Image (cartoon, rainbow over all chains, first blue to last red; front, side):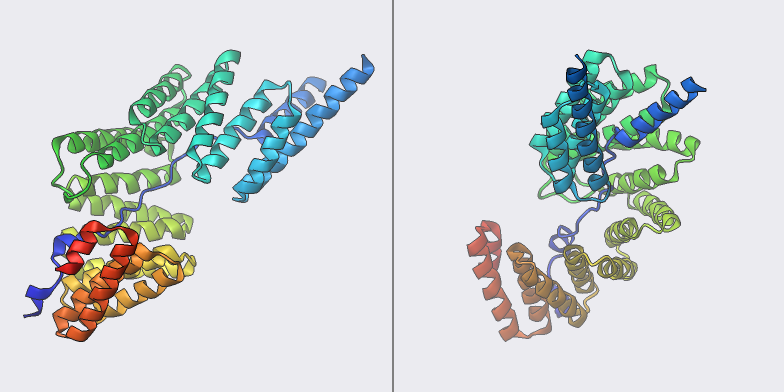
Length: 46
Length: 356
């Protein structure tokens, strides 16, 4: 009987890996910061 | 006076150039090189505290992605102190969020919760919906990780101690709060992430039908973006849920899709995991020839990657499958290999299983 000699299902199931979604890290972009500064300077000049 | 201001100007320009290069490299995923440029930018120094905050924050994030959480903690703390000192509320909210994620990764859940709450409080004060949603997502992740960290081993999904269930239910509540906001904002990418983690939370709570529904939503959104890594994760999680629903054929189809995507993404470690899951699924289906085929594939990759623990698991599974087919010589060969690896890796429980 194949079934009786198979790996118990509980042991099989423990091997499965849960795939989590990535963390969302907050960003502070220098490129955006300087683009904004540049735009502000242009607006002031106008 | 002129010379001094000229030197200061040159320093600012030099710091900025270095930091912008660090930012560019990190965007490309080269965090090691990015860190070097940010560190150099700090050495040069700047009097612009917004620039300094951005450099601290990006350095913290780079170290986070490199899994150097102690260094990530150091820089996110510097950022938090700085933003508080200069009264930059939005900056403080972001620093708190990043610090919370880092503390979660370090298993310091209670401190992480304090940071998430600060992130949320500031986002509420500023009527920042996006910030609130992100704080809820982080809260969910902390409670999910907290639940998994307590009494995790030995029990099966749906059968965890009360403390674990409480943490997982809180995680689900926070993810629900996040989902309500990101749906309102029409942020599909955020919806995808939350659906994936809600699916995992319901899976651990034993709500396997709900888990399937969320993972299917996650899969749909991943397809909208052509995000193959997210599709692979969703297929793998769907496979896991269908195993617990007793629908092994359906689970196998999902794991096969996960395997196909892992190969496309050229990610050998997740390819090995998919092969292992398929081997186990065919064992449950009593199709031992196919189980052996997948476990052998897993074994080859584990050997290539020098993953002795994976190799040991493959040998153990192959021993069982050969036993089921009555191939006693083969079964003995793999059982001996398994025992040898368990001794080498110091896996006492595996060693005891192997001796049986």
